[in-house]
Image (cartoon, rainbow, N blue to C red; front, side):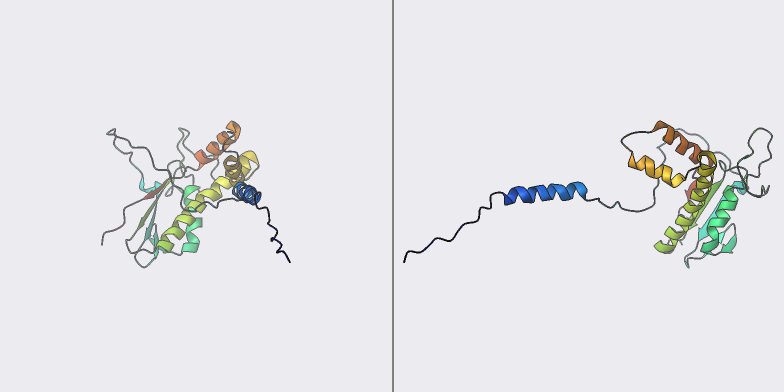
Length: 204
């Protein structure tokens, strides 16, 4: 009896199918972005200009020691209270200068011993070399959250929408620039500019 040859499967189109599947997954898969602290470094300035004199009351000092303890404005403070303290400082609006330097949108206590205006308010953060990375990030998050809270409030007041949604819309349509949206975002940022200064850690 003659042997019958085994039927062959035509696999010529398998490579095309695999290639199409690969393209499909590349197009539909979203790559998760790395998360971290978003910081924009200032441009290099070679001009010899004396730095402006900063009043002590416009400086909000935050110190983290090697034991991860907080010293805010020379007083011990828990991490959970830091955000509210920063908000009160930034939103104080204590200037009564008649030259137009007063903050008409600030809702703080207008304490003359605290910051004059959000544009002049600076948050200064300093940590020890033995400060844990987790505590450093937590403190940074609380300080940035204070700015975000105030920006959210002003975005709702001016444009009746969330500042976070404005940023999300800008990122989603990054290739189609919306000049009106960008202008609104910059307006809100200027009301409470992010002025977070980090001093060099102690060597000891």
